[in-house]
Each structure stands twice: as C-alpha cells, then as structure tokens.
Length: 90
Image 1 (cartoon, rainbow, N blue to C red):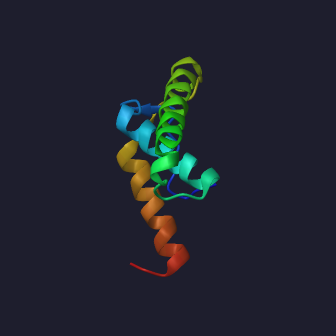
Image 2: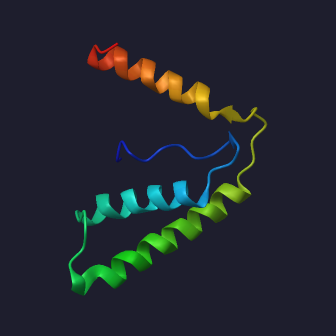
C-alpha cells in the first residue's frame, strides 16, 4: 500500500474531506500507475478518485469503535519518532 495513505478512522477531529480526497487520489495513482493521467484517461481517473472518496467517507461515517479517538499531534509525533529510528535522523 502507498505509504502516503494515512489512517483516517477514529481521530478527533474527524478526517476532513480534503484528507479523504488525498487518500483516494493516492490509492487511484497506486492502482493505475499514473501520477497524472493522459487527457484521454483524465475523466475516468477523476471520476474514480471522487467515487473512492465518497465510498471512503461513507465507510468512515458508519464504522464504530469503543476506543478513544486518537489525537493527531500525538500520532504525528509517534510517526516522526518511528521515522527517526528507522532512518537514523534526529
């Protein structure tokens, strides 16, 4: 899976439409192999991104959990720590 696709479920505040769209775009780029589609494929590409975003929003709105919502800043710090450990940067 694309490393740029982030977990969007169970955050406070909830995922924005922009975050969902960005994840959908990354997914479509990954499965098509296109960073930017040709003119002939542009309409289908954009339609797929929008459809995946809509389905993703519906999914996120219907999922349930008993876990406390995650804090974006705490999760970002954890990701930075993992990256520093993995790549040896400080």
